[in-house]
Structure formats: C-alpha cells, structure tokens
Image (tube, rainbow, N blue to C red; front, side, top):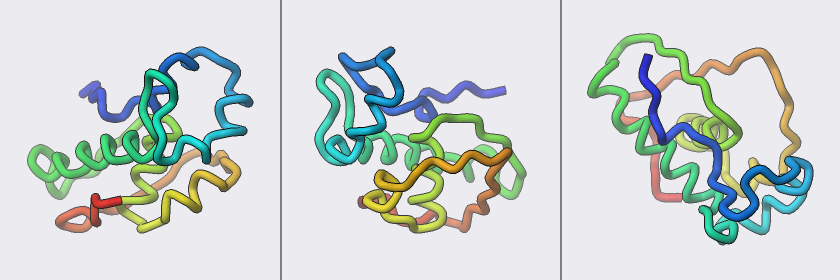
Length: 112
C-alpha cells in the first residue's frame, strides 16, 4: 500500500474542518483562487495530475486501486476523461460505488 500525499482532498486552509455544506456551496469561488491559507481547486487537481504522471514509472500496465476525495476524483475526471474543471465544480456530486479509469500513455494534458 502506498500513501501518496497528492491524493489528499483540496486544502481548505483556514476552513479545514468546517461544515462540508458551506465549503461546497461556494466552491466555484475557489476554482482559481486559493481558500484562505489553502489551495485552489485547480491547484489540487494539478497535484493529482502529478500523481498520474508518475504512475507509469512504477505500475505500467497494472491495475491499481486509488482511494481519494473530491479533488482526487476531479483530477482523474479532468486528466483522463478531459472534463473541464468549470463543469466539475458546478456539478452535483453523484456518489456511486466506484469509478473506473484507463490511463493512456502518456496521461492527458496537465495545463489547466
């Protein structure tokens, strides 16, 4: 098992530990602007992207299980499936038991 810090949730800074409802009601405000003392959603998704960049080095061609939070899921949706962050930040979170992603070699663009 590998605990990778890049898969952690968005750093809400001073708002860490606050009510989730309040954090997510205003999340579009923090797409590019960091939470006070924390990071923006775009920064969090880039962090997850760096994890994806490293996967082929260690696990090329293998199936892996990734456990994460909203930032992890958005990073996968954005980098692998090409979903715009602007669309993800405004969408309701629809829980399901699992998501399956397939990396192409190399992973998708990390520019946004």
